[in-house]
Image (tube, rainbow, N blue to C red):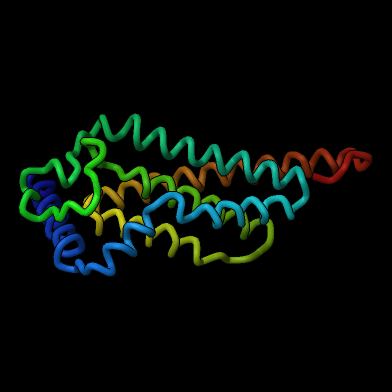
Length: 202
């Protein structure tokens, strides 16, 4: 138990530094913008555009499995794990009463793991691996995108840093698993084509 108490203590020190000690009015606005779901609508439109520039079967697989990735990470983090661990969100934690700046509403009671982290790192992992597999391109900016949103979650006071780490690990595992499903699905269709070239190539 001593180790977990120490880990919790370090986590709260890191949270205090990011949420309070780093704070600035202009940064408040920027971080709130980063974590707003509507900010990233152009990105999601771009990913749809990218998907449908592929051949239609591959593009549809990409879109369907993107939705599956999100469903897995969101349900697992928000419905299962948060209520298993029952770790209080910073604004509900009595130790953090003098630290919380109240720049955003508190939200749900529990915070581990972060659903923002699991969802965005899940998507970043699946997208990165799929683009690499299909186009041999390394979209490193996807990792920066996921990290920036998650950092903003700590900055505005929604999550402790370890909530983010837990969510990111969950998301990356889910994204990798769904990518493996995508890879197997594409290979199966390609093998069918090799056996029967009269079929359209997936």
